[in-house]
Length: 277
Image (cartoon, rainbow, N blue to C red; front, side, top):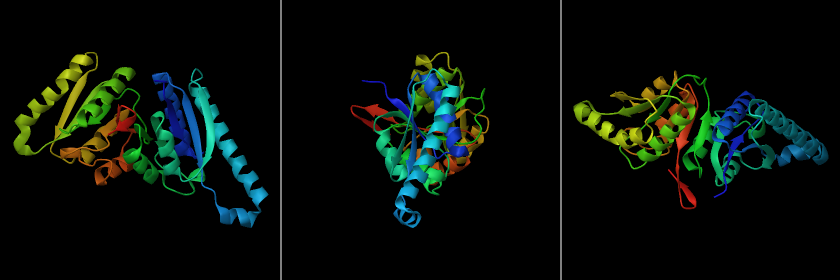
C-alpha cells in the first residue's frame, strides 16, 4: 500500500501555524509527505455585497497567502519533507473528514478563525477526532520536549490500539511512556495485576521503552489533563468502555481537548480498507 501522507488543516492564525509546525516535525519523524489544507467557507451573501470578482480576488488572495506561509513554515522546520498545499471549499469538518480517508494522520489546531469562518476549531477537532477515518492529532498547549508520552487505557478491545499507538510513538521519540488507568478502590490489587498482564506483550515488543503506570481513583479526564502538563503527547482511544468510555464523544474527551497541556492523539487502527477506533 502506498505511504499515506500526514494532512494538516490551517486557518492561517496562531493555532493553525502551531499545528503546521507540529505536523511538519511529525512528518519528518515518520518520514511521510505533508499535505497542508486551508478550508474556505464560501459566503454567497458577502460575495454579492462585495461584487463577485472583488470577493473572489480577495478570498483567494488571502487563501494563497495562508497556504504559502504555512508551506514556508513547514519547509523551514523539515526541509527534507515533501510538502504540498491546497485550498478547498466547504465546511471545515466535512472536508477534513473527506481528506482523512486517505491520510495516515490528520492534524488540527485546537481552535481557529479565518478560513474556518469563526468556528472554534475545538468543535471541529472534536468532530473529526470522533469520526475521522484515520488517527487525529489536536495540537494545543506546550509539549514538553523531554517529557513522556501519556496514554489513557481501559479494558476494552480498543485498548490494544491505544497501546500500540502509544508504544510506537514513544519508541519513535526515544521517550518514556506513562500509562494512566482509573479504577474503583475495591479493585486496587486486581487492577495492578490486570495492567501488568495488559502491558506484558507490549513491554516485550518494545523493550527499550521505559514504562510507568499511574493507577488513579480520580476521574480519568482529570488525571490525563494533570499528566499532560509535563508530557509531549497524550494518546487516547476514540471510544471504549469502563474508565474512558466514549472518551472523545462526550464530556471526558471534550474536557481533554479543551484543557490538555500538550497535543492529544486520538488512536484508530487500520483494518482492510477502513480505519476503526
